[in-house]
Image (tube, rainbow, N blue to C red; front, top):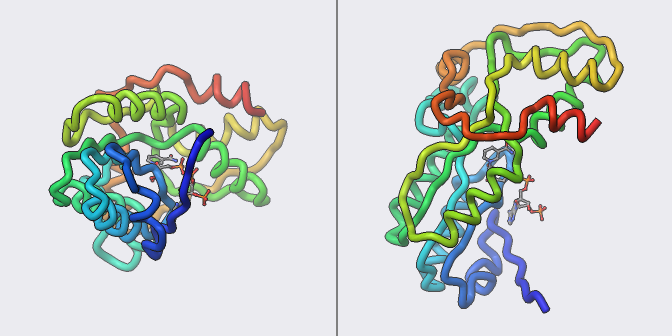
Length: 219
Ligand SMILES: NC(=O)c1ccc[n+]([C@@H]2O[C@H](COP(=O)([O-])OP(=O)(O)OC[C@H]3O[C@@H](n4cnc5c(N)ncnc54)[C@H](OP(=O)(O)O)[C@@H]3O)[C@@H](O)[C@H]2O)c1
């Protein structure tokens, strides 16, 4: 029988109890906003529960995307929260391993599918992604969880870099839809960093399953 307990990382309720007797914690819980708060609650509870190893999943570019202005926060606040969460884990005093991953195929598909519901599909001009299969990231996390704490380990990223518009076009083709794509220039330092490729890790293109293969299997 699998035993489990439920904790809410937004409020911290039930998290210490959920960690009872855990030596290693793989912290994958996340959402578009507030991952810094979730990490703080997890780390506080992990210290109290005597956890010996935290494995954390962050995002490629967490340290390279500056989130300073209100515009940055509105569009790319996720990167700032992931960076704050990384620091919280690293400064916890608990031995840790942090893996930064590029965007998962699953999220890429959910995003382009949602955008393609609009009569005109807006994409931020010049933004590129390097999507990776979530299962490949999960396998790497499991490997890291079974090993010794290793600090910040090399990024994991997908096999190829695509323009956002290219990802939308391939989805539209696969779904048999036709939509005009509108490339929208944005402002702010975070956008400029992402436009320059801060969210990419071409030297760590270790993912195997391509976006095209994932799309064909999930039409
Ligand atoms: N998706 C990507 O492209 C990508 C890329 C790099 C890194 N990451 C990171 O990888 C992790 C997983 O991402 P994902 O896309 O697989 O996420 P996901 O499918 O949205 O799953 C997030 C999980 O977090 C749990 N969660 C959310 N809020 C919580 C809370 N307050 N307390 C406890 N649990 C909570 C959710 O539980 P419920 O289902 O019960 O709500 C869910 O199981 C995240 O940390 C994300 O930042 C994702």
